[in-house]
Image (cartoon, rainbow, N blue to C red):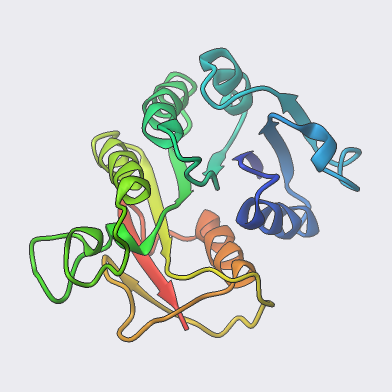
Length: 206
C-alpha cells in the first residue's frame, strides 16, 4: 500500500511510520524538518514542506492509497486550516481513506449527552483551544464524504507497546485514563486495513 503520512516526525506519527515500514508499505512523508527522520531516509519518499501549503499537500497525496494525519495541535490553527485543504487534495486525486489522530475531548460525553467531552464536566482542562481545533478538524472530516476514521486517545504517555487496550465508537472506554503512544499508533495503523470504524470517531484507552 502507498501511504502518505503527515506528522511523521511526531511521537505517534513516528511509531506508525515504523509499523508501516516493517510491513513493507511505500511511504511518502511531508515534513518540515527532514533531518529528524534518522535512519529511514533510504526507505521513504520525503517531501520537505508545510501541511499548510496546498501544493505540498497535493504532491504528498497524489499517488497514495491512504493518508494518515498524525499532526498535533501547535497552539495555533494548523489542524483547522490544514484539514479542508487535505480533503480537497484527496478528492482531487480520488484518495478516499483517511486516518487521523484526534483527542478524547471530541468524543461524546457520557455525563452530559449532547455535548462533547471537552464541552462537558468530564473535561479537566480549563483551556479548550486544542480541543476546539480537533473539533473543527472532525467537522471537516464529517462533511468530506471521505472514508475517514478519527482515533481519539486520552492521556498519551510514551510507554511501550502492549497490544492490550479497549476501544469504543464515539466514546472513551469507561474509566479509561491513558494509552501509550505505541499502542495508539499500532491501532491507528491497523485501521488502514479495516472498515470497522469508517466514518466515525473511536476512543482508545487501557
